[in-house]
Figure 1: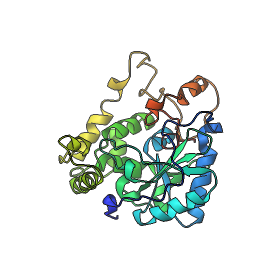
Figure 2: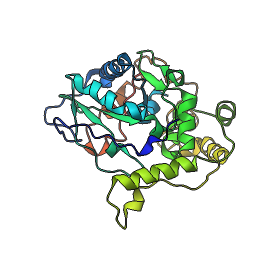
Figure 3: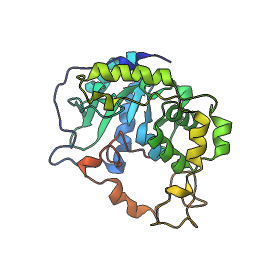
Figure 4: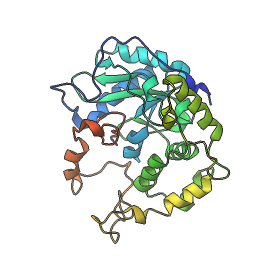
Length: 290
């Protein structure tokens, strides 16, 4: 795995756009899955392995696209060569993230974005053997690979969502993950160096850095999978729900779902609240279509 966490990519910005979107933007049909596939197909045709991670993957098992850091410039050029996207001005720095240093693109005429992120920032090798495909052909990080990366980087918010989304168990983790030892402290220290190099250093800039404590992986996993029921809110019945996302007896969320009981959630999924673009499935960093 490469160590190029600190490699910033600043391609020439042909046209800047607001993160919140533009007046008249229309959500792409199907949440943008076809447009996302067009992008990943273009990158793969150019010989650049890529897959969906972040909340997009959480929505699938629910972000970014990743490729090797040395290929970010090439990947950026591939997307810029498509007439469908504009290269955006960098995002503002966000705690524990380097997204403001990576190329961000907006689908023309739509509030949908794609962010190119190097594999070193995601803590796994961007190689096809680490991918799985949705039934629509979209590449995602394999479930075990994605879970291990979230565990090793101490990304507890996403790891909790993944556990609840897939209803993962203690036994699944023992069989599929490396639970011995601690999270990757060396990776966290390298990321903090990259964060410090990317922002003006102030009395409060340390708040952008990641935690470097050597948390035990097994303890983290046991705590998260053991708390699935406690995370179910009062609005749904624990008698019928295995997790806050999964009814008991529900099918694997990666499989195509028949329209029915959950169809009413579509309006919520495509909420246009600009403050929720990082947490609600409205852009390609978030949306995963199975």
